[in-house]
Image (cartoon, rainbow, N blue to C red; front, side):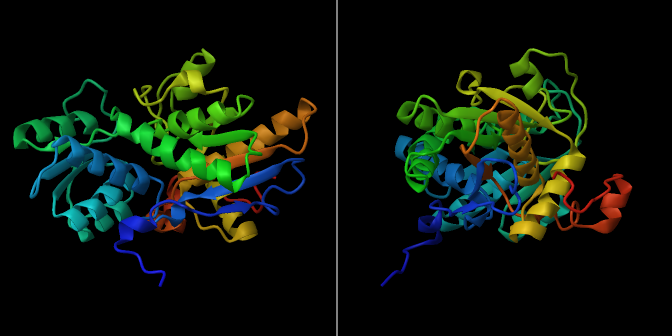
Length: 332
């Protein structure tokens, strides 16, 4: 009988899908690692479960304990699942930028949700990461600290990287992903480069984030952007720039249009960060073709699905308010 002991055993082993229609005419094999098909709806299920299990092993979490995390939503959902299975309390701290869908989902899953003002400087006490740290200290709770916790990187090194290697039978040439905490690129990228040093790792960055500018050593100032879950005004400790070979900036317009195009062409219902990464994959494929390279296997990690964005990128009034003009096959 193929019966799992708990939903935690369904984390990972997500499918890889060839984007034959979305990537048509690019001259490369564009492959999507469908992380939005994890049970909690995102790649963050991987790190949430791994960090909790490691904290238990170290005695940082004990029965009846409390978890605190600063999150754009997805890690919070993964932690809420872990907390429900293991009997912990969870407090999540989120910026006002995040969609109401995520807030409602976390509350439905039993988490306490604290919303902080958006746009706060990293040294401001009301920055969502600083608030989470303060709450954890006040409550004597375990701060899972996804931006600095090395178990985040380990989860992707031990699980995501090997899955990509096995699914492509070692033929992967390029890994493209975003960086919220940096765990995916640093962990999976490190594993793949160890197995095949020629693998190139590409950072996808929303326009308005400074990560690509820091990597490319170009001038860039932090600015507001609509894509959720990736990018930022700093380089997180878990984002190891020495793993990265290239960085590509993608506008909100390109990201959201690509998310719609993935649904139209491949029936993949994804969120704004997935659209951003898919658009970057197209851009990188074109760059490779201009350099005379052909038929490479490009793996784009699509981190989360569209259901958490029904009040934002999949809402007509929101799109009009944000001046997002959708165009059929916008990135072709």
